[in-house]
Length: 201
Image 1 (cartoon, rainbow, N blue to C red):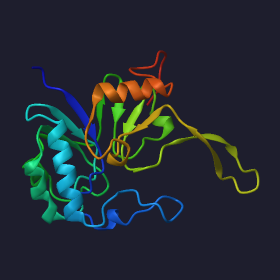
Image 2: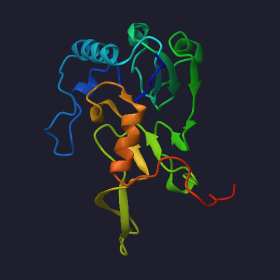
Image 3: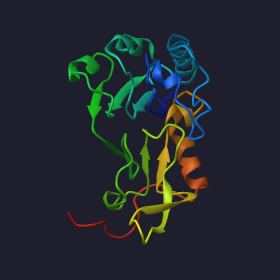
């Protein structure tokens, strides 16, 4: 059986703080757990129920929050590649015990994978930026600039050039790459490279 490809982001293994993060309303928790150990165990179970040992997983950053949680990664199935996030601050060799490769970003099927959403000026010909970092949020379309303050105003409409694969948006388990493509297409996004030239560098 051919290995499948999965994506995930922002597992935050070992992070007690993420169990207290809330939505913008300040009340609704973004994760159903209060205990980080309980969270870790359930996310490990969901990961291994989804990913087989020879499947490939691109983890789009913020894998663990503290060094102690690194050993959790030995329990996860798959041939893993880490696209480093802002919390992936330990030495490369500490991650290489668990990940075949470490990257800043990765291009796959004409789409760019990153931790933090790339600036729209950097999208170029990439149809979509698949990213993490935003947890339950999504990149929204700009609807103009406030004439008084100069601040960019955003609509409630999702920007289809960006797709978030944080665990909060994938039932706390890695998501099959084909399912990400279906989600992107359902939102009107472009899979693969866009026609025409991107900006010159």
